[in-house]
Image 1 (cartoon, rainbow, N blue to C red):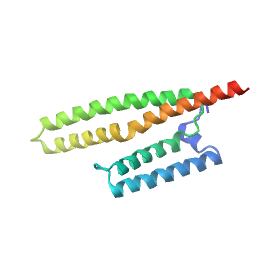
Image 2 (cartoon, rainbow, N blue to C red):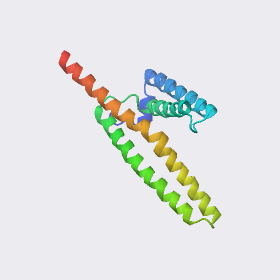
Image 3 (cartoon, helix red, strand yellow):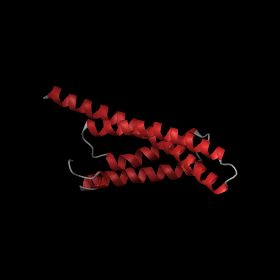
Image 4 (cartoon, rainbow, N blue to C red):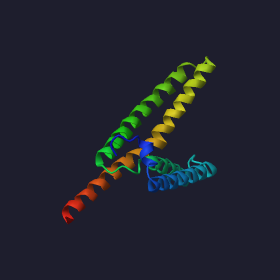
Length: 148
């Protein structure tokens, strides 16, 4: 897997392409379903949105075979969550200060909502995939060394 760009690795073999397409299709179906039923105070819609994000992430990273990749992904998810949560608060505060400047306020509100959605909808599935993936790879490696 060294030297391959992530998306190229996901599309490098016929099997990887098939798995990527399946994950991508599942993600699109779940995202569409979440939009139809809504995610505002609706647990099934929220879980569908999380599932959609997880499927779209897995469409890209499913060829990974080392725990190091997943641990880096876990750390990146945690850092991104903290960063986007802080950005959400900063943009919200700036939007509140600039009430009389409508164009700037609207731009800050868009950045506020975008930061919030990234922190709440994208980072948690990334963190879970990073944690579960690293544990699964380590368990698989441990089982192979014990059985040999």
